[in-house]
Length: 274
Ligand SMILES: [Zn+2]
Image (cartoon, rainbow, N blue to C red; front, side, top):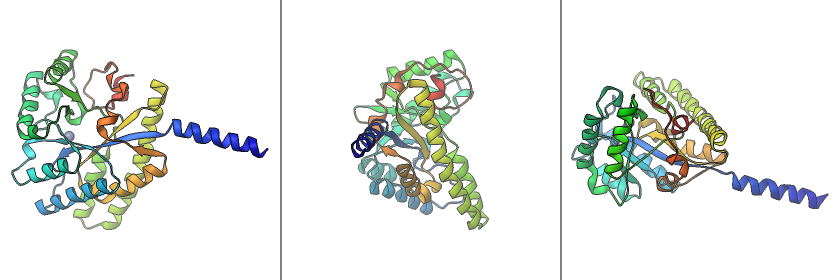
């Protein structure tokens, strides 16, 4: 009996190891995402607080830069982000919505961002679409795909899409009114929501591909995460998630599957390959 229990235990351990949930964390809208009411000093503080949390957990991420937001002073943030082992990547110059723009104008905006961050590029350069909008017609979508391919970009797809930005906005709004109790409850809701949405996309990936994939989580370089990122990482780990560098996660072949979606919505890569 003891032996059978031991074998069962081993099998559970073994399959658990085989099916561990893996994700990379990525941060959009560097240097600072939506942060009205915060002084420049407060923005710098929250930026470095997030970097410290990533250091503490030894998590390597990629940060997607909006070129026009980079003043000479803010450039230091990018330098430090890069020097602490993270990847600096292109998120356009002016964060335009591809639904409202031609492929040509959109491509020029990407080139313009290159001029701000190209000293950070290694042998590989990554691009992420603002709002995850990849084009509302086949022609537009494929024309930008061709452009990115010719320019040598790898598209930084997102498997775990979410409404974290809305929690950040609500959190900052309540702090503006001085309602710290309400802010705390938004923070708690945010954490529970992120665990649930991560598992939702993990189930979707299993259903679509029949295996665990290397997930890519979209977060923003925002104030909310400077307060909650360490709690979020702890809760995800308790829930069985492990973290891997973005540069590894993006090599999962799931991100090379054909894109079957045409439309205006910004959605997870998993919803595009359905
Ligand atoms: Zn963005």
